[in-house]
Each structure stands twice: as structure tokens, then as C-alpha cells.
Length: 136
Image 1 (tube, rainbow, N blue to C red):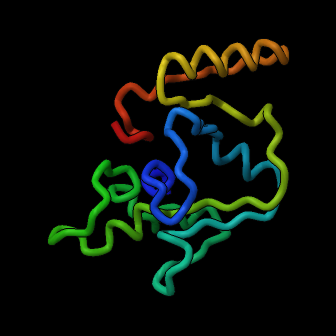
Image 2 (image 1 turned 120 degrees about the vertical axis):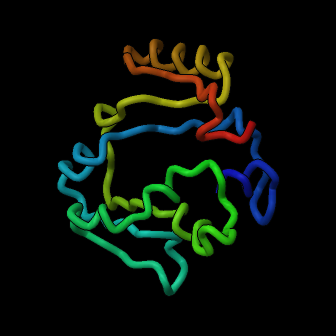
Image 3 (image 1 turned 135 degrees about the horizontal axis):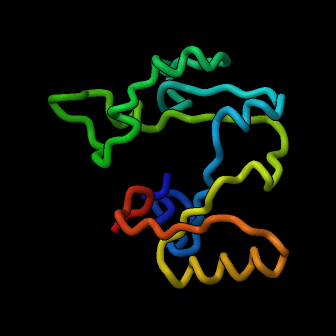
């Protein structure tokens, strides 16, 4: 989805610098007691399975999920779908559940840190220097 947002392919184009990633611990989010489900791939395909029990996390293809490569190829003809596994939560997530915020660059790190400080909040804000979340 970030690639589509970055390029404006079928969605309004937004600069990556204006997108932040909020990182949460899965067990903390589940502990909130809200209904949730997760998928083993892109949710809008018939092949994708849905789960509501964390014991099924082993069914996700973690190699595909963590891969920096998106395209299907001879080694994995289903990589693109599997890489888009989703976790969906119904209900509010308190800011206290946030573990870190990732941003595109140092300028955004300073801006987000200042916004948090203005609100009396302390949270780790990290720059994604390795471009694991953003496109370089």
C-alpha cells in the first residue's frame, strides 16, 4: 500500500515523509480485549485465511512478510499476497500501548518528538535509516 500511496497509483499521492509507522506489541494490543483477526495474506483474496487465535501465527509465511522483495518469482509464486498479511483490531488503541514511532528522516523525527513533548508525552521516535519500512 505504501508504494501505491508514494506513487499515487489508484490512491491520492502522499510523500513518504508524511507517513509515520506506529509500532505496538501484539500481545499488548490483544490484551486490550477488543475483537481482532489476522490474515495470512492480502485480505481481499479468496486464498487468504483468517485467524482469531494467536496460536495460528505460525501459519504466516514470516520469510515473505519480512522480505524486502515484493514480487512473485520462481522461488515463491505467492510472495506478494503473503507479504500483505494483515492484523485488524476493532476498537480504540490507547497511546500508552504505542511502543515506538518510525519516521522517514531526521527532520520528521524532530517534528514528531516536539509534538509529543508539547503534549507531555515521551515515546521513542526512530528514523528508518535502513529503509525497511519506506522506499529509498
